View (tube, rainbow, N blue to C red):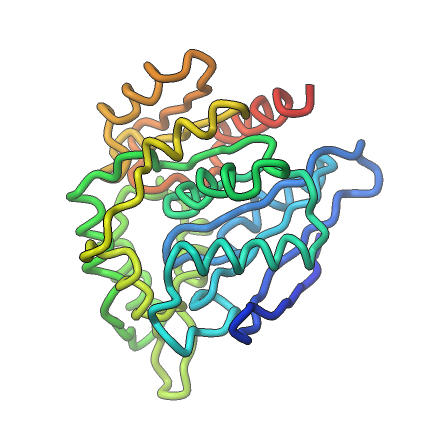
Length: 287
């Protein structure tokens, strides 16, 4: 199964890339799914998830945010900001003719999913949040921002794999094929013969604390009350803490939760338990 490649143009003239997985023709037609990757990640992170859901009858749309993957890097780094991301996503959804859909968001993508539930309230029918919540643990956020904001060229793929395993020791179990995919989705080959991060390192400035008031993430969380929500947490996550998850549970009796022991930030969502949880969440939306 091969996705179609989609492009649209942002309001400031950037080419925005996405992968569009058509539902299998032999499967019953199900709700569309929008997949939003983590802060520096891109559409290819969802290849396994998207292929599986497409085989079940879902159309799965996986965009690259500006500055990631195959989308253009911003001319002005100040546009690496939530308002611009929302504007870009609206443009991509309109161009793709996505009208009603469920959103799967990993890490930063989960925060965007909460916001989309307010910005595009008539379209968002459910949210699955992967290892993220309305409070982001300071230690994990600092670890990630410090790492992603500086390019760290690798001499070859073996060196790149070693570097990534040191930074993300608990993302995958003993899965050589999974690690190979993760490394390939993290680095790109450059003209200098070395491997570089597949994102614009300037984008981290858009999420670092600044003089502007912080977004009230708990207000966004309360705004999701009208739709079914699934939260997936890695049991060793340093981004979504156990106390924050407990507060989320207390605020919503209907909240579906899956914790994956032994995994850190963030699960791939291709774990067997995650597959089952996502299927059950989508079934709730469709009933």
